[in-house]
Image (cartoon, rainbow, N blue to C red; front, side, top):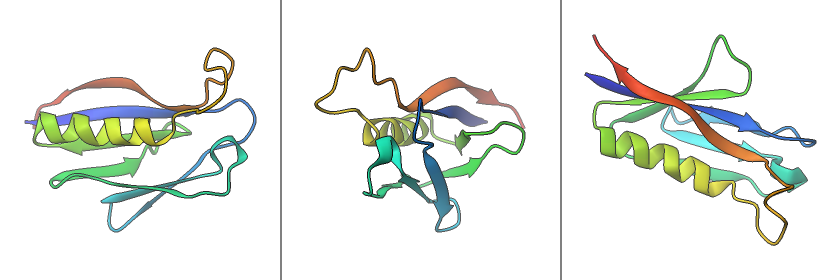
Length: 104
């Protein structure tokens, strides 16, 4: 039994660039709201992340433990929060689009 979270990179103007490093254990998020800072998010143990082959700007997070998988997706979401701006207008970020169980 594996758990899967699909996350979409949402942006209005500056395209968010996601790079998967360390064999699927680390995500680097660049160019969020045009910032130069690189956000590095390490996955929790037993959780892998990859880019979706079919959909543009989508990350797929998979793992056997639902707690670690959901916490890893929450860490990615929290790394791209908009600070000191009107969040009703600035909707950029990484959001969970779907989650569920993959039976093997």
